[in-house]
Length: 297
Image (cartoon, rainbow, N blue to C red; front, side, top):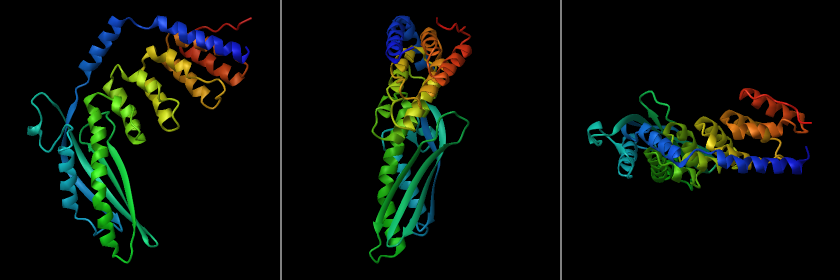
């Protein structure tokens, strides 16, 4: 099949797929079910630990930094408390231990301090771990290393707090701000969080991210498969470029994983592709769907 004819066939599949989408009433029911399934948690800070290493050792006061970071998160306007009793009466509690690592590395007359903050959940959960990495550097200019390390590390607390708060805010269930963010770390965290939240608005937002450079594009495609919403198959098909041979196989697999009539139509078109690798991938996808393949004449 010539490329132009194949492109036209793909466009037809995407267009006809719109007619197969579920009714508004059914989508409304799905939205209600998803909202009922997700209970936004209040995060309880079990413990805050500050761990200096390298040239940052002896340059920071661990207890002071820990208090400042915890207070910043609690006052950031997200659902974070120090004690379970401070949460609302109907809130779901999720405990976590916050660790701030401060690593100082000297290279000649320059010192770099990297702050890595990770919130590890204290109970079994599928939720991803909030994590932020921020770095700062400065010339020593004759100052003692410890003095320079303190001067670099102290201003890092604010961006660390801001990054963690942005991630924790997404636990409300509204992933839109995260998926639309310019911060790739926040986008990645929102994508990883999406299968747990199951917000019905998310699949359409995720489709728009699959063309982003790796790792966001790859994560977005994996998230689509994990969400399993067949309503996005036409939109996914419309974004598949036949000339992008490196990305084509994995996107064919994603369509097959989601399944449904639109996916089957698409795979039948590609099953006769002149590229044997593409054709084999499409036929394997049809087999996964339990669909029979008949070569075109």
